[in-house]
Image 1 (spheres, rainbow, N blue to C red):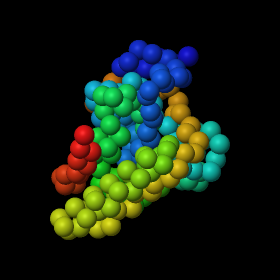
Image 2: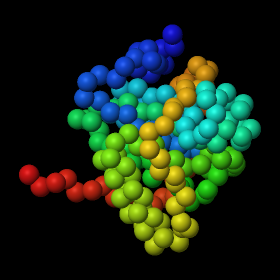
Image 3: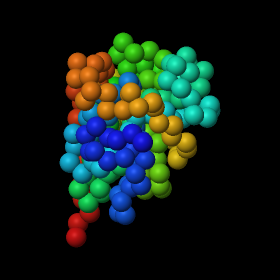
Length: 191
C-alpha cells in the first residue's frame, strides 16, 4: 500500500463524504500534481493516465504513443474549501492549452491538454471555461484551444515512483508554463 508523500494517507483511500474528484492533463504530470497538492482544500493527488484505449498501461507504453492516454493528475478536493471553477482556473493558467500534442519541449499525445469530467455540472463548467479562456487567448494572439474534454472513463494510476515525484526529487523536471493570460472566475450566484 502506497502512502501519499504530502498528505500521509493511503493512495487508494476512498474520498470522504462531500468531496469530489477532478482529472486534468497539462503535459508532464509531475508539475500539475505539485500545483494542485499546494492548494487549500485538496485532500489527495495522484498521477496516472486517462483518455486512452489500453487497460492498465505502463509508463513506457504511454510514452510509446500507442495507447492513446494522456498523463493526468487526479485531484480529490473538498468542494466547501475549493470549487471546481477554481481548479479550472488553475488548469487554464498553468499550461498552454493551444499546443496540441505537446507542452513546451515535451512532445507526444501523452502531453496533450485534457479535462475528464465526472458530472453534468463539471462538464458544463469545463465547456464554458474553455470558451471563455479561448476568447481571452484569441485577444492576446494565441491559437485555438486544443484541450480535449471527456466524460468519466478509466483512470490508471502511474507506478509509485512517479507519485509526488517533485516532493521526492525537488529538482526534477517540471514543464509547467502558462501563457500569462488570466482565466476568469464566474461570479457567484447572488443570494
